[in-house]
Image (cartoon, rainbow, N blue to C red):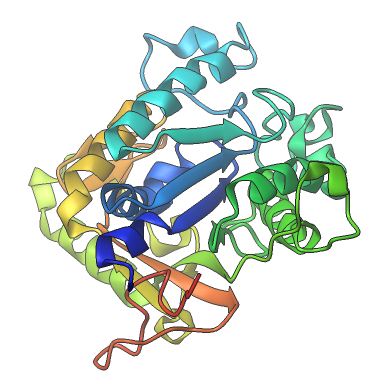
Length: 304
């Protein structure tokens, strides 16, 4: 008997590896909500608690690292609220909550903290991810490019750990006590085509005096911007735009959302896209859209 489309969707398993709470909602919120709603298994692994983040507004400013250093535990609650908005029930921290600490931006003193993720042994951290991969057995993995999208040390390290974890998970000789080996069929990196970014900023500029934010960011402020030709897949999450916005809004210390735009602590507006884009870097591409040449489903071509 042939499986029904709904049964096939229910057998899909997606794993996402992100650096800090909020990265997932900004980059993949619509994708996560769409696949969760379709019955796919969606697992999020977050590598740090985001302890070194800035805080929007004054009400929770006392949580920051140089004052109470209590932002990390608070961001656990924000992440949980965001996942409820997206319908994602399987979200974990790499190793355990707080196993590795937010490293801060590149070049700052917190990069050298002995517990900083930037200081982690990539193979040690990857072994923690192997445990998840062999348990969940995803067909698709999503993470950052080698520069982490914009050069943040934790994003770069998350890339390294995700790629190394995928390699080690498939090796039957590596730590058999962590579970049976598993090969991930497709690995994608988060990207966003330059044309989409430029169109979004044009719309924000066109809002003029009605813009919800005092300033406007530039394409250089957006992680993962690439030439359109580097994009290989697009997931249309338009039906889940409200869920993505709500998830981003749940990260109240980090993100302000106004209509189709958002801003981080710098208060510079950015477009909030509901279509999310990817580059396939491992595995075989499935059927592609004739008009764009892109896959429209991250599971395209997956047979198991």
